[in-house]
Image (cartoon, rainbow, N blue to C red):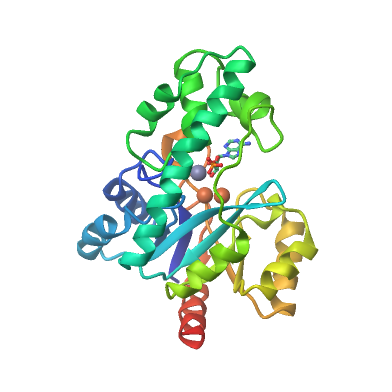
Length: 274
Ligand code: AMP
Ligand code: ZN
Ligand code: FE
Ligand code: FE
């Protein structure tokens, strides 16, 4: 049996492994296929593919796009996208800039709460990657404002926290279109986060093609529920660990392994869509 982990981050976004390290760890974990799904960037993919060839592991191009919907964050995964498309790369540059501007909004809110974290403290943790809240959390730990990344999210920057800020400007509709226009398959990441069946139906109407059913935070009940939904609406089933390296040491690469059949189904679906 061949297995895949289709949700992984590198240091091109908020993971800590380089593409090469990630590929090597994937091989060690016994995976035959991985997808790198960095936030709003495809920067790691070519580098990972170069290493993967000699190690006999398959890399599926991927991305995790952050969207805003009714003042909340929704993540849409794009698989098998044309990661070399000039139009795609140009649009992603804008998203990267939006993320930089958002860090100023978050640090301003933190400052108002008496946490004197500077945007530059965050940028030095990110070191050129697409910058996000996990970098904010790590900077807060480094500066001694909180003890752990979890504490930073729980007290300040979690989705309902006092220093949470949006600023991505992509709607789910635009992200789904963007993925499909670039030859990809759009999948709703970790559906438990949105907890809203009606919204999933809406996204299906907009061209969503799959659900990330297998995810570390999903209970068996949730897995069964999303499997049922996928069957009923003829959606692809995907899954992955969402490993971020040592930024979230409790989530290991390959802790979610899905059968390779599901990757084949995805490839078939992409052929039908294009
Ligand atoms: P961003 O794209 O900047 O909004 O950050 C989203 C990332 O923050 C996710 O991919 C996770 O890595 C991380 N994250 C979100 N919520 C939490 C949480 N409660 N605890 C730890 N990490 C979180
Ligand atoms: Zn992340
Ligand atoms: Fe996510
Ligand atoms: Fe992720």
